[in-house]
Each structure stands twice: as structure tokens, then as C-alpha cells.
Length: 621
Image (tube, rainbow, N blue to C red; front, top):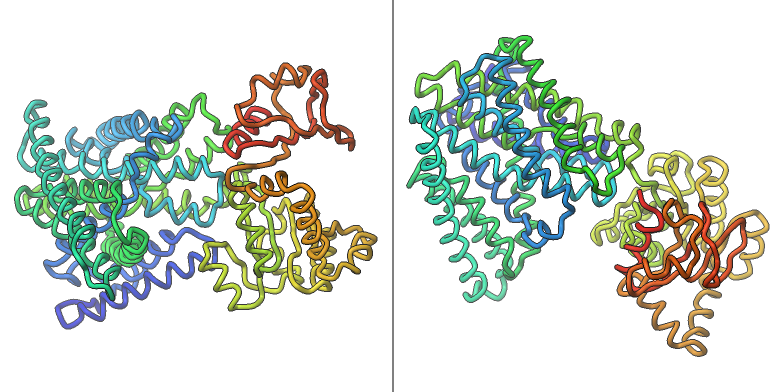
């Protein structure tokens, strides 16, 4: 029996939020993006499943619920849109949110018009909404698919920027449909009006919040909490005030307020960001489940072959085209470009805004336009979420875009210190720890931690030992470290296995068994000796990972083969040099006339940023 009426609304909302939280937990447990579980839960609870949620469940409140939810989600995305990061972003990222967005917008609009016979304005309304990939679907994918930083940054930035711009463009087209505006000049005026009202209201709210947060005493005991609540209230006020002045101007207002606040220094910024993230997660879970539950499969089936054509064009033609065009000439590998092409699911902004618009289109008597809008948007979302988000990890593994892992067994102080240094250099580090208290401590510090016994083969396998480049046994128990090292070597064959010897008397025994070993006692003594005898070098080595760095990399650059150190040196960034070259097991300090060969392992020493740049020169990807 459908849940309906006010008496059932509170338990219904509580149940949806509970299912949403469980979906997030299952996502983390099974390493599958949460949107897959959210959509599945919504369909199960809706008329197509158990009929717990129907179109009557929320009465007339659905439009307001969806509108306020969109406000929170857009504000959250805009708050994380950093202007300085956009300036520093690779050219490919900037192209994705400009040239790529235009290709997606126009291409989708054309596909909808010719495949479904929809009016031009409705077609481009769908096109505008389907530009948005969105952080709400990209972030869960990046949590379970640890791609390289450049790939993650490009997808993340694209999602954040396009979420905001797509929503604003869609609002203008929607208002034009309701007002019957087709003249280009009138469209521009409508866009300027809605955007202008949104920007003014958003700027006023952002300025007010900035002044209050910076200069008003928010209570010494509860200042962070008050700051969080004020920011949330500000986002809702911006949306409501702008929408009151001009319908659908609220999205531009919250986007403006979020961008402005996110790019100025405000107190308690980390607490505000974490709080908004949690609120957004709950809102996202609720809206995704509620909207999926209201999905009518009949509307999808009515699209017929034309709907399939639109999905194929959006996912398999336009997406690869815009990615390869945007990433042309950048440092992305072919596999990374294909991963970005095949993993671009649409999410909550298209779903929620399409539902919001459909309610108003039906009220205006434009039922056919509403069905085309909702049916097309949800069909694309369902297909891309199921196949692109659901299979994201498998796609990444097939394309070999996941960097090999470093497993550190032992989440104590030594393990965490090592993990921090490795992660700072871009390595994909996973800690394995059995003590639940230590696990919690490490996770609170931002580490990825797998709970279990590192001496158990199944635990090692589930933590990613099969894809590990390096395994480090860093526990305080030498017997455990030896067993872990032998298991890793025999079962998974990583490139390197390293063990910590807590008792220096065990070093020789470990190495006789073929385990490369570091004695914490001897290493500490050597560090002290270096500080006494070689203080300058010791001080500099202490800066490694901060201002200084030493990296060893295989030379693969064709342009450097057959050239001498003297010839290559001037091409290296200022602040670094080639210190060592290893060839056929021999390592030497190269003379000026030393000739480099393919496959040489080159050690670069110098300032951190310079070393990273030199790595790319020596080993381009």
C-alpha cells in the first residue's frame, strides 16, 4: 500500500534517509559508487517495485523539497569551486568546461530533436541538463577508483563547474519555454535578467555571511557550530529570496553565494565544508531515492528506439569526442582519455532539476514536453550510472589507469609516517592494521586503512596486494613482518618487499631469507651520525617531502637517448640535477660526458617542484 498523507510523511522521510545512509555504507564496503545503490533503492521503493513511495507520498511538497535540495547541492559544489585552482588547471580541464560543455550541449540538443522529434527549445533544455556530470556522481567513483591526480582533478573540476553552469543555462531555457520566448534577443534578455537577479542576491547574502563570520562574535563556546548553521541558512535564504523575486533565479543565487564564499578567507572553513558535505550527503541520498522512486518506466519505454539513439550519442559519441578534443596535446595517456570518455555518468542535478521543471510544465499544460524531458534525462542517468558508474573500476582496470598500490602493513607511527611521505609524492597508499583503535586514528588522519590481519593472504588480497608495486611490513613485531614479507613475495610478486626489523639482531636472518630489511635501531643511529658529521646534508634530507626531494625514475624519453649529461643538464628545471645513473645493476655519479641510454634509472635531486617537473621530462607518460 502506498504511503501517503501527512501521517505517513515523517516515517517515510526517515526511512528514505535511513536507506540512503545504508546505501553509502554499502558503497564503501563493496567499492561500488553509491549512486548505483541509491537508484536501485529508489526503484525498489517506488511504484515499479514495492510501491512504498508514490507520486502522492509528498503531496504538494515535492517541488519545494526538490528545490531546496537543489539549492544545497549547488551551493556545496560552488563552495568548492576555487578560482585559483581553475587558473592553475591543465589546459584539458579548462577545455572540458568550455569547449567540451558546448559540444555536449549542442550535440545532445540535436540528438534529442532529430531522434525524438522534440521541439528545439525542449531539446536544448535536455541538452543543457545533460552537460552536468556533477561531483555527486564523480566523487563516489573517484573514491573507489584511485586514478592519477590529473585524471581525478579534471573529472572533479568538470563536475563542479558544469553542475553550476548547466543548471543556470537550463533555467533560462525553461523560463523561455514557459514564456513562449523564441527571439534570440529576448532569450539573451531573459538570461541576463535571471542571472543578474541571482548574482545580486547571491552577492548580498555572501557579503552578509562574510561580515558576520569575520567580524561578529558568534559565541566563544559554539562559534564553529553557529558558523556552520549560518552558512546553511544563508544558502537557503539566497535561493528563496531570489526565487521570490524571479522564478528559477534561486539557482544562480546559491551558485554565486557559494563561489564568493568559497574564494575568500572565512573562519571555520574546514568545519563549514565538512558540515555541508554531510548535509549534502543526506539531501543527495533523499532526493536520489525519492526521484528514482517516482520514475515511471512507461515514460522511458515511450521513448522507444529514439531514446536508445540519444543515450548512444551522448555516452558513446559526444563524450569521447569532447574528451579527446579537450585533452589533445596534454599529458593524459590514451587509456586515461578513454577512461574519462567512458566514465561520465549524469546525476542528481539533471534528475532533480528535470523533475522540478516537469512539475511546472505539466501545470502549464505542456505534458508532452514534461514527459520528453523527464524520460530522456532519466534514461541517460540510468544507463550511464549502471554501466559507467557501476563498472567504473572494471573499466579502469581494463584500461590500466589505476596506479599501482603501495601496501603498508602496520598503521602505527612508523607506518603512518611512511604513508604520509609516499602519499605526498602521489603514490596510492593503503594501510593494513588489525587494531581497531589504531585503524580509527589513521582514518581520522586521512589515510586509507584496510582493517584486518596483514599476515592473512585473503586480507592482503582484498587490500589490493595483487596490484601492489611495493609491500612494506612495518609492524612492531618482527615475526609478523617476516611472515608478511614472505607471503607477499610468494603469493603476489610485487616489485619490492621491504620489512622493518625492530631487533637489529634479526636483520641478518631476514636478509638470508631474501627479505630486504631496515633496522629501526640502525636507521636511527645513522640519522644521528649524519646530523653530527654531515649536518648540512642531514638538514636538507629532513626537508625531503616538503621543499626538497630525491626521486629515481626510469628514462623513457626518446629525446634524451644518446645525449650526454652536459647536453641534458641545461634542459632540466632550475633547482635540480641528475645525481646518479644506474645501468645493468651498476650505479655511478655520471660525468659530464656520460651518455644516457633507454632504460637507465636516473636519480634526480633538488627542489621538490623542480624534481617533479624533471621526472616528467625524463619519463613522459
